[in-house]
Image (cartoon, rainbow, N blue to C red; front, side, top):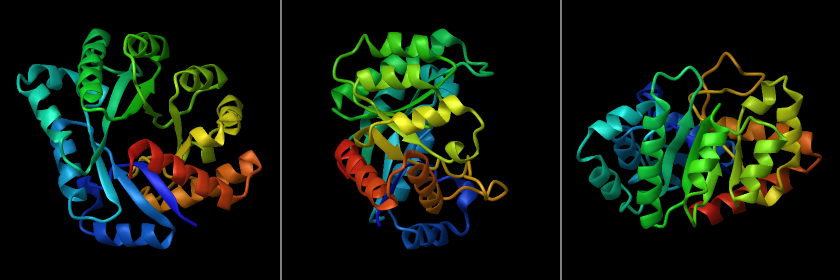
Length: 255
């Protein structure tokens, strides 16, 4: 069985000093490919640097909506991001998007940063890793201003309405450990309804550790726990779910 963790932060300092042990544990759990997702320009550089000489590890480059102000304040930001995207280890732009949940970053600033990064990513012909929280209406309004947008809605935890909105735009759906501990039936029903050819697995490590390991730090190896949970939830074999989600990840990110 082969799995792909399409959204982790294995390059974060919190995984030191045993990052290589974490990588080995992932391989033993069947996680053969990992994508390290950037959240700032510096963090994206770190993700790319970590992935550079690692087989089975790739990276993304992008600026999280909470970091939008710093991105816009940096006059060299556009050139820096465009430069990062030229690396053969960068497989997507992200994580980018809108997050209005308890955010101190003004909505218009988030939207401007999102638009700039969409334009850079489209020019580079790369898919996107989207972060959306309590901002769906504005997010779709921005996305619909652009043609050719592909990618994944990372850490999807909404209901059928937003699932249908994402699918109608050709986007993939990334599910993680949230599904193993949520009590929201609408979230679980949406997870059941994701077409298997649009489903991706992720951990968001070191965050969102799946049940029953909630007190532990999340690692890429936990992709296997989420995969098993989703297979049971959806009435599919773990082999079929693993095969499909791995194929989906390889197709979207050209791994």
